[in-house]
Image (cartoon, rainbow, N blue to C red; front, side, top):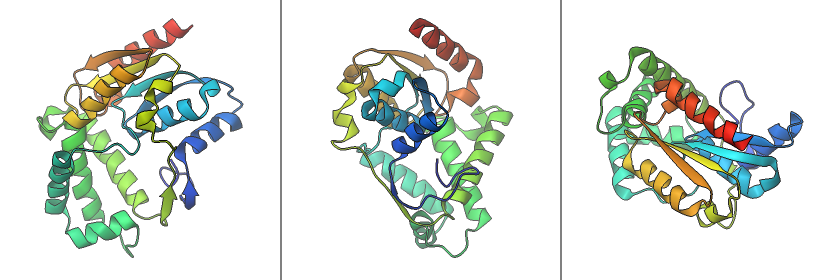
Length: 231
């Protein structure tokens, strides 16, 4: 993703699925099985709809869905947790990318909220995560928030019509990996995709939002079996 890791800053207006397809083109990859976790799943879905000939299969792990109408209960709950961690006016500047300074203490606080609510899940605690999983997830979130809040403002462009109305257009085999401790709203996306994507199968794992780091063996096994069937 632009603006994260060691990539260049995100600037202007762009579509993330164009970035993904552009990467495949730059690497000389004519067709690929796309594996995406969370927002990575959302961008993989967009790529499969925008350029179906480039995608051989989809593996969507606790996937998001661009422009999905998140339940008010979930947004309020997350908003309350973040408001308890960082004052609202300061948090607004971070989200808008207008802050002159990003306080590492704020980054750490929001990272902990994110790992608690998403990686562990609303019905578990941080103590339910293995120490190495908790440490890795916290470090990832800290780096991502610090970087994302520090880049210039940009505008993300989404496919039209909205992707939620085009799931039935996905014409490749699709594996849906669901974490049973993920927030219910995200599990509902898995339910929706199972109904609307024509050639979809599902695996439920004993994990929160990040099965690849919480249940790496089971996730890898599911992916390898899925890819083998495509062969």
